[in-house]
Image: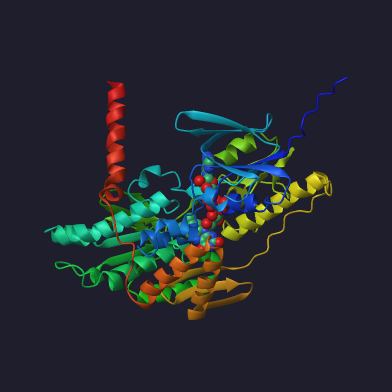
Length: 455
Ligand SMILES: Cc1cc2nc3c(=O)[nH]c(=O)nc-3n(C[C@H](O)[C@H](O)[C@H](O)COP(=O)(O)OP(=O)(O)OC[C@H]3O[C@@H](n4cnc5c(N)ncnc54)[C@H](O)[C@@H]3O)c2cc1C
């Protein structure tokens, strides 16, 4: 008599996203008896907190965006797939992703969704073409092209009004990203580009930070907000609080100063950067709709159960910027801690040590937050302790080095910071025609193909 034996199949964990949530989830399953498939629409793990340094010529892309499959090369239980996840089927436990014309359906036993968030224009999506956000490598390179391209155009134009417009830079949103990028645009103009042009003086550039709230860095409290504001103003940045952007176009933006009842004012500016809001990945809504009783909040984040799962699906975890958990900010720590928690529940279940019903709820440990304002100057909040200046900058430096992936990247980053902050050089000032003009070329080609299909 023969007995057919089927080799037992390992538990399959599918992870969507290669950001802080996705990558840390994959790494924490390294020794688990599972097969991991990580699907992401980019080939890299992006260290978003340093994107502004790519946009302003301090770091190169490779230093903050190492290839995910190289990071996971030695993790034998993990495979990495490039693809845009277009469908998640909770009932049949599959994830559908697309790469070019290929569609792939990947089955899962456990799913960790860490698809993050995108820039939000609060319903004014047409702003995006004129005021890109800073969420992706493409965004940062496009902004670098726009920022440095504006100085080039100002050098060439013979019109005084156009020169002024080209040398006006507006950052919308005074959260940590807005503060960091506006500070670096000011330092780029004042230190790095000083003396490099013949018909313009880059130090005369007008750098403006616009914020609808009455304070800079609203989540960090009034004391640190004021510290950051004073420092920016000392650097020559114009800080416009209680100012709402009502329109953005190619030539500049329209703002309402002094709140809702204020007057409309025009700011002619070639470079506009948007860092004013986030909208969660649409995958959140798609998943919530398949889970009876699970909702999304106003930003599209999934209101998860205390164990970060969706109702009725104890093996579907939503983590990072895509989850909505009271008291957990959309920060790297939230995503990392969510990843560690979710993978622990999967491992416990496989060991038979904790059924889903017995899971302890996710608890977030707030390790603080910080933002750099300029070289040698940052603000930090760790527990109840708030401090600013050089000490906070050192803390920022140490923390970012710790979380950068890869020892080579750490060494190169330290070297780049050394030349930028001690000296005034920046090693990544190259821009290409494609970065500067890519969006317009893409739009033209889309318009042309739309016209063809109408014709
Ligand atoms: C400019 C900037 C500065 C920041 N600074 C700080 C800081 O100083 N400190 C801090 O703690 N936090 C900071 N943050 C926030 C922090 O980066 C996020 O909280 C963190 O990245 C969230 O991790 P995540 O894994 O949830 O999402 P993300 O890191 O955004 O990763 C999402 C992943 O999902 C993938 N993805 C999305 N949709 C799909 C799809 N349909 N198919 C396949 N893949 C998909 C993306 O390609 C990406 O790999 C900053 C964010 C930005 C944008």
